[in-house]
Structures are given as C-alpha cells and as structure tokens.
Length: 262
Image (cartoon, rainbow, N blue to C red; front, side):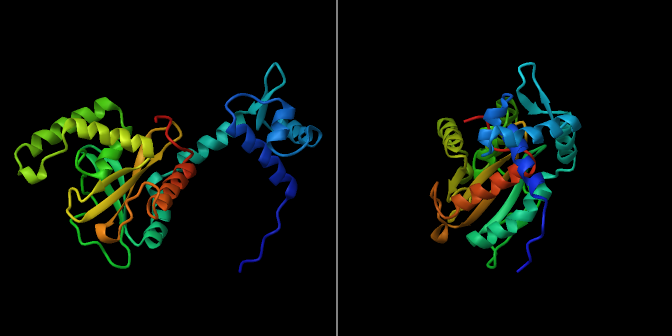
C-alpha cells in the first residue's frame, strides 16, 4: 500500500473555501462562506485576505466574495487541455469490468452519434459494432440519448435524413412511431439514461448515459450493452448505477456536471 504523502494542511483548508465559492452562483458573505466550509469566520478571514491579494477571489461592493480572475485563468487553462474522449477512455475499462458488459463511447459526428471507442469485457459481445459505426437516432439507445439532449433543429435534420434512408428498407428495420419516439426522449430526460430492449439487435439490451460540458451541452454518450438474459436493464439496476457514476465522473473531469435540461 502506498504510503500517504505529507501535504500542507493550510493549503487544503484554503482550497475548501474556494470549492464552496465555486459551488455557489452568487457571491457569499464571509460568515456564510465560512459556515459552508465548516469553519469560523475568524479562521476563514486570513485565507480570504491572501486569496484577494493574488486574485483568486474578488469582493463586491457589499464585501461579499466570489471567484476572481486567477481562478478563471486556471480553469480555462485546464479546460483547454481537456479531451472528453481521453477522459472517458481512462474510465470505461473499469466500467466494462464492473458490469461484465461491452462499453462504447459515442460523439456527435456529421452523420449523427458515432462510436469512437469500444471496450469489450472478458467475453466479447459479437455484434456488428466497431469504431466509426454511426448509431440510428430512432432505433438505438445511443441515438435517442443524443436526440434527447441535442438542439431540436439539429436532431430534426438528421432524423429526416435517416427516415428517408430507412424508408427503402425492410419492415424489420422500421423506426419507432413519432409519438413513441417522443415518449422515449421524455423518458430519457426523466431518468438521465436512454434504454433499448432487444432493438435494433434482438436479444441485446443497452443503456446509455450522457456526459456534459461546462455549458451543459452533451459531448459524449457512454453506452453499456449486453445479452438480455444477463443484462440488468432497470433504471436503478446494477448496470445503471455504475454507468451513471462513470458518466458523471467524466463530466466532472471536463468541468461539466448534470444537464440543466430536465
């Protein structure tokens, strides 16, 4: 076991104050900030004086504190180095191991949701899915996830193209009726996950979770899929919970969080 490394306790305490400022939209009075950080105003005050000097925080005319230009500069510097797919790639292997299912990462491409990373469990899932696969907006959990959170006009255009293509195919490949499709999008926003049961591949179930950027825009879909016989497709099941946790952690790493929509 790695030996715990010695740190500087005062820095860790001060960071706690900055974290609380970051969690609140409005500037905070010293007493409220100190209370949120679990300390007295007298203890918090010297930290805030130092943070003011270096530009980590600023004060309003009323004397309330908010994050300052240095905090913004550091945050933007970190965001410029962020690659959502890279961050996701560091976590999906563990998700595949925990769930025992196949995990994929999708981004929004020119033709719609596109698989850019695939992680197989010990027993690979033999389906026609590989890097570069474009997922149906109407018929897949991944497609409906992006359709639920992308701008409606963007979705409408690609959905119309997809319907035109599918109109020439067999009945087995027919898309969901419009009303059912809209219901599935509402369900996705409600649960924060999209789900498909035996479609478009019979016997294969899937759950897909969104990753959001700092502005609340969807940037990735994290897909878990597997044979229906051993796939817990419940909204709060043994796959949904670690999937949500993984997607939220990726969002956190790129400066995002939960969507502001629904």
